[in-house]
Image 1 (cartoon, one colour):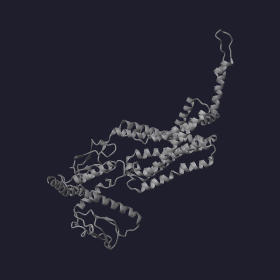
Image 2: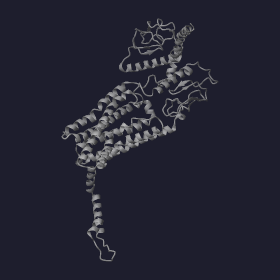
Image 3: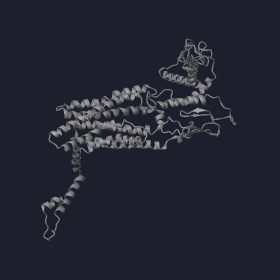
Length: 562
């Protein structure tokens, strides 16, 4: 009996308190104002995109009255809509709201008629406060999650901080005015919440944890000037919160070091690749199918390296560019991704060509070059266009110059890259297998065949881009993370230099052509004649034997001196 009473009491208690808990969490004043601000923002964005499609107004334009977003309506027409859920009190979900568009082309009154929706539909004085908050926060609130996966806690923490600011600062009663009748008003700057501050005082706030490179144990500050206004930055003229103390200087220096490594490495690779392309194009004796593939690969490297240099200098090193998100930085991102795909596909073509030469006895090289051109330059257009269009249409995924790599759209680019790397690895294994088999067939010693196989593997690794298999596995922050970032920057940016050295500057055929050309130049011809005269003179200089006999000019001695 006692147990039954306890169960009944527990059920009754949960039945009574659970709605109160839910109302306290989801029906609070801050939650309602947050939803109103979000609805206002959505209405303004809808009106903006609609105004770009329509050339003329129809009468009453888009309007958010605090409860509902009313669409454009003809003059003299009464617009209707279902009762919005944002209304205070108990809402009649079956009712209808009305809003009259007058013949003058203006809405009748500050808000629509919600009499059939709720008994609390009169004008709410808090709507004036809502407009003030909306003007203050602007676009400083991440209304929607930037990506379906990734660092969601950062987005959620920023939302929670703003709701906390609404409840404890922005929506609380206004304070009494100071002696001079003014004070710096409460505000949300996108990162922190600042309460009303007396003139001449400095407000402090904890550094936000969701900002990369900030230490949450430190504090930011905001100065209220003597005239009761927030301090404005002398250069920009905008109201400014000082987050300088929040910056982790060691982390900032390390990030700058990594960016410098990328720019330097890509620049060195760019110079080496341009010299290699000049050599391949200038000397006619180097023109063949194999060199044609090399030239296309090097061209993709050149353009891709140049794009990355522009990206790191003009975007990554300029935080304001990422924040403003101009169209040119989005276009630069898409172009860079296209040539990066071309880079991978031409490395795949290099492996396919080597594999074809070793495995197939007879191939039509003219036809295979045409296919390689289609694969290397044409195929990357498909995933790049798909990536650019789909991500560009997503308003949240197209923020911050598209530097966020954890959005699912990047799979459109990653899948072709992964497939090309896997196929290149298969080509590498089979090429090494065929080389070892042929070396053993000509009775080469085991050590010699192994050495040549290892040498071929080392040469083919940068050519086929297989070192990229390691760099995607990014460790957590720590000493290993720092080493990973530096090694990844060096390996990635210097790949072009490595390929140029192995397949141009260390190539025996290229070196032979260069020696032949240099030997025909006047300066080298003069040096050759001068050295020849010096050698001849030295060869026939009198040499006395130790026993004092006459000089000798033995052929053996001459050969040694020459």
